[in-house]
Length: 617
Image (cartoon, rainbow, N blue to C red; front, side, top):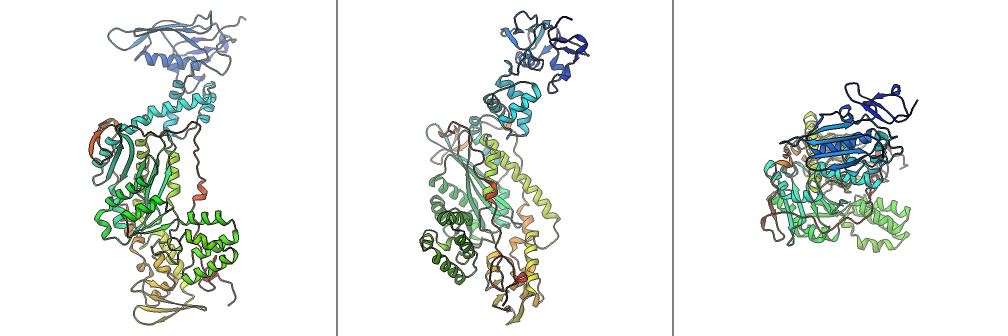
């Protein structure tokens, strides 16, 4: 039997005969490549294409699916002629433009192949553009689709090998087709801010450009729903944090995050700046102050947690001079650990951190100084009034570390390759989802307090059974245990152990006093822990924003001097250096908030409660 080349039989029962096989071994076209439809793998005289580009793409897809390469003989405005790249093979197609319309049609076609086709995994038609088109659906569903995964999937699905650089460039081109380029994202910022203000009245959205070329400098966004929720229902506590972006033009994402009634993150304001600097932190806190406006006068004194970089400290002191600005305990503890590298010192340090009274704190400091006198020098650098429970004057409600860090790093990873507008839209979508989900959860709750607060109150009531209660008057109680006595004032919501003041929830001593006089301990929690506050936090809606095709490209922006002008924002001068960027810049498990250290009310040791104490007295 003579060897035959690859041939195609068109029609309803289209088949393929591969080189070296007889017609009896033919199999349906659709089985060659499941990702390419039957219609796209068959050609027939009279077949039409909307335009010449569609014609080229179709022929390229067929060539790759059937493992032969084509060579373009002629391509102009009126015709497209291609043949098999193997010399002597008769396969040839002539496509011509129909008069008066952009449509092209096949005029002549020789579908027979006498060559052996492509005998290896490399294919001339597997260009960057083809990679982009082939993987577009996958990239749309998963922007984190890696080039290494792309080249492996192309090999598995199409039997074609592409290089890592082809896969990377194909993904870049596909991302640009789906989301626009980085440069287009900056141009759209004025219109995007206008859409936020229009669809969400009362929201703050502004972009700042600088220099004669109007290069991007700052973007600030805060939705009215978040502003309302923070002012009316959240505890007066904010976390300040930032993450460095790894996109084409780098930049830094700033965020001010509150905590809702059930200890969940509640982003209040988000900003993107060209670079982290003291000037940009001053601007961010200025915008935050304007956002809160006169409302801060009726709020309790704000407590702010951060890493207290120089820029953060100066900005907070300038715009929130009455706020308590404390260190994130993770930052402090890591600095202490890296400075001394002594596990015994670190353990005593944590005892000092959570000591409730100044006397207990000073005792722990004395223990540390006996091991290393350098502890005193370290304490001069990091004043305990800015982090120690015994000395810090602000109310942290049990939040001692920056819980927003993991959220920011996740945003940076998920939005790594998105233009700035798409990144902000990704964040908005997540916020919208949180608002909807949490409001639904809140509406189903039937308790007085949110679940996390209910659990803590229940534990306090359980521990309260160990105490003897002596009533001094209508509001003052003496709570006696085997080793110490605490004074509780239920009118001022104060306990001498300080837990009630520090956490906003009645401690075990307060619970004992309240139960003894027939009061419900749940009613003596701070209002920010109630189900009513939780519902109020998410009562407003973040409204959707129309598709960008409906925006005006030019919008109202702000130049470096604060004047409002119609501008085209250009990318910042900073560019990502060559080489593959590090995507996981920090292990997320290291960001988990340290567990709250339990201190026994009987022996004062850490690690167990009074109910489980086994120490002899």
